[in-house]
Image (cartoon, rainbow, N blue to C red; front, side, top):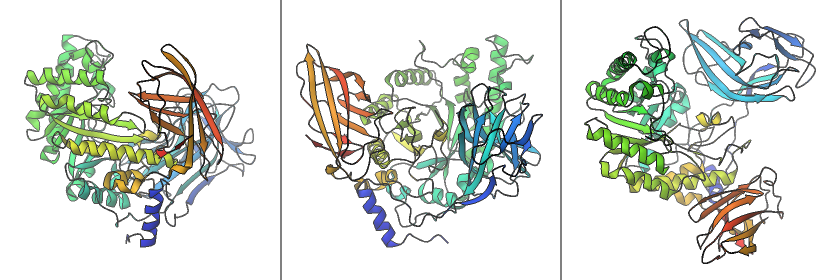
Length: 630
């Protein structure tokens, strides 16, 4: 059914990658629209209230045409318009849902989101389609996201809700569409055949096990991590009432496809039901002896049930997750777990997990472990607990990074730090955002960002493979760009952090892993850079950098990188945002100067410090491409 790409298409893709250009897919299928609600006929067109609010057609405001849907009389944020899509959505098909929203005049600013309510055998579940998006009375805002129905349901409605207030709002021009799936590429190397030093896995939901997603997953990866299905809110939503409805199908898929499973996670301060942290009287727990005993008993009961349910089917567990806060004097996160039990919840979790799953590798997992203060705090905790005999087998480094941070050297220092402890190390949640900060947003991933991302994957995987003696697995936090948590965190925008794009086709990042020769940067003729010192004084100087676009295509955004040869440091900049690690500097465009036409120029300035010498840099790259220096 899924045929290899024609040879000509494969050659075109390779050529495009050689020049750093993100290629279009061969014969991209056109979207098929299955729902359109424009409210131009004066009716609600099937939309109905979820609670006691009023939902009715209105001509008071419109995004397109003269009509919209007005939502008034709300008393709760979840109240809003909903549409029955039970007979529209097919399991395994990914839909794009878009709705235009604006608040009514006088309503306080808020955030709105798109959600789905689904029922299976009368049990309700809720999924987010588009994350919190700022809305106001001043302009229409599009809420847009992708959704895949992955389970059988007997009730399915999509709805609009708000985050904080209960003001009135309008909805207009709602569309639901899908793009027929492309076949996965079967004429490219399998990741599992190229990276053989350790298992390479992906975090999954049920959607990743269906159709072409399931084919892609089984073809390239050797392990899976259920992203949410094993967390406390999914497995024990009410006390001593255990449910494995979300996780069991994922484990069954893994067994059927000979994939190892990483269990994530037994203890976390997030996604833990509120009842866990209430005392015997139902009040929030405080640090008393009684509450300590109760909380540890609940923890032990949870682990004994969940870990025992899966037995040897799960060979690795992230036992505790994100317990470090390097800003605290003792380095520990001030969660309710810690406030009530201090370190005893970690001791209990690992001790009980070892009893219940004696053959599993038991991991303590955290993010930003490349940051020295956090890395050191985690090291100290693991060293202390292992010295007590607590069975911590390994350290999990999440590695949620971006195209500009961290450096390979910082990441290698992270790995080397834990070698003396003799623990297993695993890369547990890797993704590489195309954004450098929260102010950036692109309607589509720019080619230079995808190229820069490919270099990051190339360099990081090469580092991990050099340290194969310490690293026993690498897991990506997702399968493809069509389903990534970074679309809604830390802000709502489309990100592209993984190896395969939204159509499940290989990206430059994929080639960075399996064949880095395929990501040669563009020719040097695309940019020219002028660097000059405009003023100097003892210990300080002022510089100006001018970029000329000598290529044939306009720049939609830019990032210029160089290395200072004499230890200079940038202390302040204008018309650009600098980042510096050691001698390496990257400056990205400001909001107003990212667009540079062919033949056009842009510039930025900075203040810097120097000692001994102030030698000018001799080489610059723009989005990974070498520039001529003028």
